[in-house]
Image 1 (cartoon, rainbow, N blue to C red):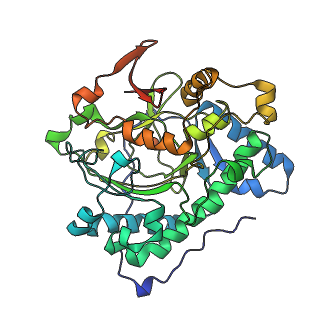
Image 2: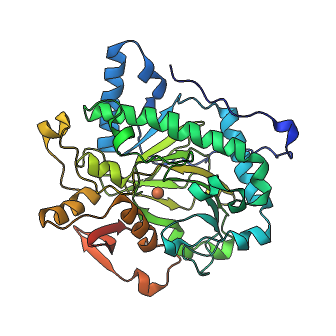
Length: 397
Ligand SMILES: [Fe+2]
């Protein structure tokens, strides 16, 4: 059995952290995306039939939706809310000096550091009401890289990250390796990054979406982030009541993801779509304004983005019996576009190149109009077209 999360509890020796209070769920009856739930504890079941059923559910969820709820993964609600309280504390207490000193530089290909609420470029853009602190390897290595106000809590952030990457994600990748009919450690050992800190080549994000004031409501036509796929292996988003995340369904309709207390919302990144030859779907998603009943609420968000090994150039796992038997799915996303290059004998980008260029090139509602101009229509659907190192990426609006 996997050990449950056992974080430091030396709260008495630390500054008091006000408790994060989850806001009320929406009162509207919304057309939610119907996602499947995976009970990760069942992976430890001694009954092979139970595990087989779990693998089957995971297979369908990642093929059809590319998203799933993960439950019973080892972190309880109280432990999770403590991490939200720390994230809230960071946003409320980060000093002006630290905001300046730790200012991010996304044009360099990393989101590391503090994002002020003025767009997604290194220089100040239009107001977007989104502040973040992003912890990469360097932030885990050195206290100088993180806001002074969270220094006393880095032991807890470290333990939380380590449990997510080395236990939860490892077990999740075991399950996904089983879907590929490969040895249990295949994805964790061969695709997932490893590093000297708990975050490896991924990053942890503490984000705060400030509610728009009345005069700001029309900004970005209600969108806080355009549709995109994530570039890594798996993304772990802790479900929150303020309902903003939307998925792009196979029917071309955007639907909200419903709040599930304590659940982790998992989505598949480009790397796993490529390794699985399209059997796993890197589903497009975006951040929309919440429904009217939550318009005045702050949305606090804690997300862990697991990173793939930076020096690898991804291709389908040809040893997978699933791929040998059923071939690859060439109709979608990053896999389809990488294949165009591979068929021409052109090297595809490495994982590190892919994630850096994705960060630099992703379009945002706050970008200047000339950056947003490259609109194309495919099968009646409007997209923004971006070329990343020779790979065409279509972002639905
Ligand atoms: Fe995302």
